Image (cartoon, rainbow, N blue to C red; front, side, top):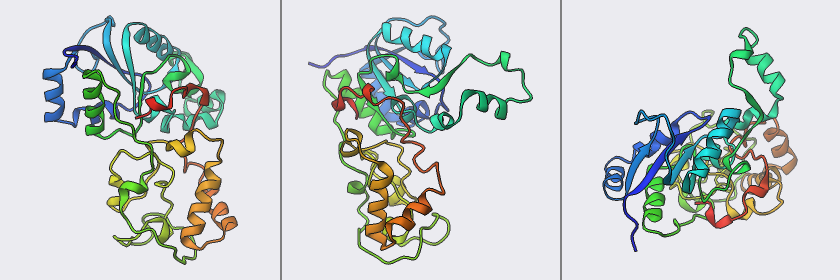
Length: 292
């Protein structure tokens, strides 16, 4: 039976607000959902309400970087029946967790050397995803998640159903032809013009579509830009103790003909290639069926 008029809160922790912006980009589809299924009772972006109310559904973007973030997410969890982690920062750590490669002391000295740090929010040692602190009912990764993916997820929740899951990799949605090739080296996406028909990896570009969870529709590789992994690892990689670099090296070597050692050397020159694959603790993914 359909569940109607759920009370909803929309929360932002440490983030760029891109996920809520993507939510709004759903346009008429979002307006339909809001008119039929939801009543937004708390959202600092839209509503001037100071106290967090009890709700049926909390949609939370961003990760936990400050003590205030942790306090807020614990309160939100206590006051919501269902909690959805929206976007790669909330689900995995994401691009904001690049700071985790340096100590907090180093970050403060480098970025705030001319500012009185006592005026900053009290920072945690690392950037964490939500489920390091609270139970999460559904994870919707993406940087940001595609608008219709967000809408389909919350519509399923409104109807009392589990949202449809995406378990395979972006390559299954890309439809470029995967062929073995012979290239001399790896290329940046702007170094040469890409063939519109062939797999980007086969052309020597570093594309993470073979590792990344599908569900986005592959808009980046379809348009000629490499997948940078914003949906996080697919099931085949997330739940195995597999070295992501080793897997990618093998894929690239097979498709390009470049020896694995040379691929490894070139990839290691770019330590940020997996910036959206950064994790804190794997034990938080206790229920794989909740990753949308």
